[in-house]
Length: 262
Image 1: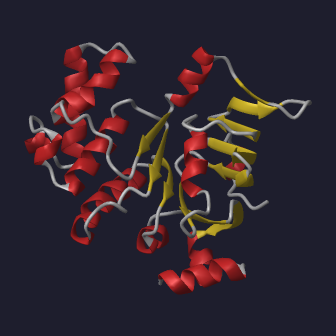
Image 2: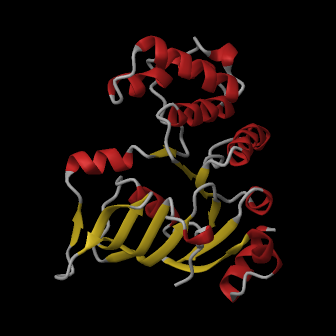
């Protein structure tokens, strides 16, 4: 099964081996193996319904896997035992491992009754026990990073879609994760708003944030990703360095997808 590999034998930030997931009789993931190195940006592409978002949700326990194993930063989160049963680590350990990943969704998922600032400080205070002053200082730094300092006291209803998504990115970063997972972060945006979100993601990549990005933005995948992984019908078909992938993905199904998208 194709996978990207960590440089120099270092422990991968994400390591999925043979991950399987079923919904009823439908096998959505058919043994996905993918490794993401520290500081690597992997673009996960493929047709709608190929299992990309489900795979992402399996990496932070929003979905449970039915087979295979998942490790984050070398810590096993789930594995399949000798009887073929998938076993997760105990809940306290699971919560700690999952806290190492931040996730940004298609539809922002901001708390509508909280201001931008309150959206950013809630989890660090409640989950991490960060004092309010420290949480506010961290939030202000992140709002400056995503260019939204002036929207600090606004409610989400007063923001554009692009601004909401940048707030969502800042909120995920407020938990200081080691890995950022993006589930088609620009798919719900008007084209003119997509660029501002992609610029923020480029800056994260420049800062060596480990990122796994489900995307239909081929320009982002070509220009920012180190590795492009192509999924179709619940399988990882090809994973190659971005430059090589766009020159020749090495697979007819992947090439047909590129021909359609480019």
